[in-house]
Length: 549
Ligand code: NAP
Image (cartoon, rainbow, N blue to C red; front, side, top):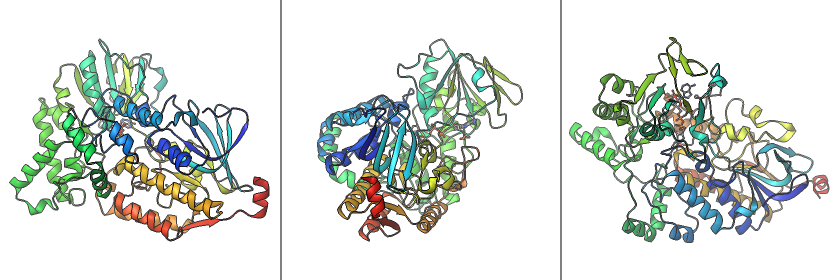
């Protein structure tokens, strides 16, 4: 669709984003609840994160068949993944296939950014405005903006003075980039850069990697999806999905052992080796139950990975620079293919910017604090995201009393269940901060959120409820739950985007519920079954009804 500009549209719901979340939300509102919904999307196509992050090597790192929708048996049966871990182009094709199959595109207004979102207490309605002149008034407002969609590009002095080509992994050109014969610098060594670096190195005349913190990357072990395996998965989707939903992080790890201390050192090395060979997140999330809880257990796995890095990188000095020294797995573990071997190439060099940080960008490249200068034709930023809150704040939400979400969350997110925030009635967040989101299976987590939101809307419609929002006090309790679980693990001990500490000045709080998708779903369901304990549900007053009509 294409919502008409310069007129005021009244609709039941507005959804922002046309990635996994927005697509399923639209389908559910429109085709299951029979409501009118408008979707706004900045890109010119569906796909969300898989539309933007099309840098070389971008691919998922949980198995493709887990990284997909489960709600439609038809979709599950008709779509066949070609690789164990699908690449960006294939995932984007999959989302296009889903959008076409469910006939969703006509209700999405593309190339349009929401610029303001105001709650009107006189009517209990949201007014949404876009950069292309749309004004939409709706009862339900739903964010499908994703957790990692606002790029964080460091504001180095002289940033705009570089005369060469500038790229960001999070906004890669659609036509691709040919680095043949070019000198390239890349800043950042997170999951995105670790996927991109080996492929860029194959093309570039020379690649310089500027690393602040090394990563415990482990092999993805990707490969083609054989037809027999694909058929077996299709025949078995029901149980596979149930297993994934029940697993703590949304993917089953059947070889997980309880404690590293129950095994002999030889057994430990063998088990870690087996997990290493299984690939993906097997070592991180599926080796031993105490690795992310006990520093001594953690140190054993950390040393195992460091030894793997030392064995793969020829130059001992470079190898040591690539060896992390913080707690293993407390940063999101990247999965790699030939990443460490890339540093054995003559055309790749690694520069430590922790001991000697970037002082400024100049016309030809950059300078470090010790005045070392680097020149290149192309500069790539792979410096991460203003995760969770960044994309929400860009909606410019103003709730009751004109309170901005930024101001209400000035000490970190305040939510109940990561789904809603006090003072922002009928505003729902799909995979928002303080929900399992990025540490669960994203598509399945999205489905659970969409279904909870849809059931809530259905309940409101059936009972003549005009608004729902969390009680303020319950938000303090939920934050305690989220932080309490996080603090029982080792994860908060490291500075990461999970806590917001990758963004200068961002308030620090742990933004992921780590209790697992199943426990989380149970809490959400119990809340709904209790008649929404912890939420305030209200009917419209006569004057609100009069103004709204
Ligand atoms: P990231 O993990 O946040 O990595 C950003 C990198 O940039 C880090 O090496 C960081 O160093 C560096 N950096 C940031 N600011 C800097 C500065 N001012 N100066 C120098 N270096 C700076 O970002 P990402 O690699 O884009 O990945 C983000 C997340 O996206 C991942 O954790 C993952 O959840 C998701 N992702 C998923 C996939 C997949 O599913 N396959 C692939 C890619 C990404 P520090 O570590 O020192 O901060």
